[in-house]
Length: 254
Image (tube, rainbow, N blue to C red):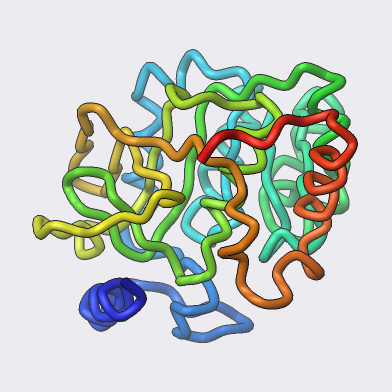
């Protein structure tokens, strides 16, 4: 399975480099970050026309470079944005546009600004607040016409999905969208694993692809499949493990 995913990623990354913008830290190493790309503004505009975006009050948006514009536009639209820090190492953060001046929306949509303008929020906090996420949006490395996506190879979005699903902040019918460049969309079959989060929508600069019956994982965290060191480096995973141990959260059936 790992060889299958790796070969698919390498196939797409050679084309993505032609339209991607380098990261200030990782340059063009797509195994470390999801890049912004030519046409991301148009893809964002297309997503914002979707009813699932327009009706959303709370949107989870990953910290990918290509989604900075969406985070900014969501704040301008008065939507609360939930996101994570890079690699989830400092957990989840909530950006409520009612809590700071609109002149700071642009800064708040960046990874540095998020931690200055937003507030950290634990899984327990989300449960106590009864947080219900209306839309999940991610960047990704590769996606096909059936919404099956392979990210950088670390599984962060699948972990975010599993944690939020475990505490009831999302369900198997929560709309999920990927914003990508057209070159990242493949017509060929991809083979998902039980924990891979399939998208309902694939949004590119030129088109919107709607997926029928996108399969969302309902297994929660598969603890035995976590990469070495991941539990130790991701505080929300540690918190979830504690919540399950104390019977405050039920481990979903695999």
